[in-house]
Length: 239
Image (spheres, rainbow, N blue to C red):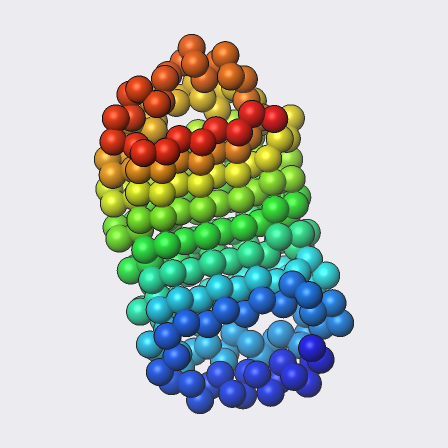
């Protein structure tokens, strides 16, 4: 896919006023540059009927906070969006500010039911970013499914994960929760010192957590399988 093709795509998108779902995956487009995507955010502005949006950008594009800000400004006006996916994994220029803008844009949409935020190996991200995005996400009263993957983000610690959990547990309709923080050295048993926070999720049916933890700590601290009586599936990965 060439830069010229992207320009053609952007022009065409502006005409698809009744489009319901849009999946833009540039993962295999290794010849593209970040400049070629400059016009893409504005092409989404008129897609007012859009219900599903997936954005997957490879790290080679060096997507930065600047691009996220532009996407956020245009996406926040798409009030019909129900399913949203952001995958900017391996984009090392994204920092806590970028994560903040993702959360803010989703909050302004308001009616999101399914949200995926995948930012693996965005090494500048830290606790401040995930704490802030948690505050935005908890305002999504209709959210039923949340997936966050931040593998390789070594600045994120157990403290940040605990804070995120304490925010999102306030979402009353959340049924599916997937958190993947990989096996960084800062992901250890302290993240489950507040494991009872899972008991605050009123509608939760499926939990999937991936981080560096101790099976003994989990068992000793809180037996989730027994206490979460309504939960149908609990998956905790031990690395």
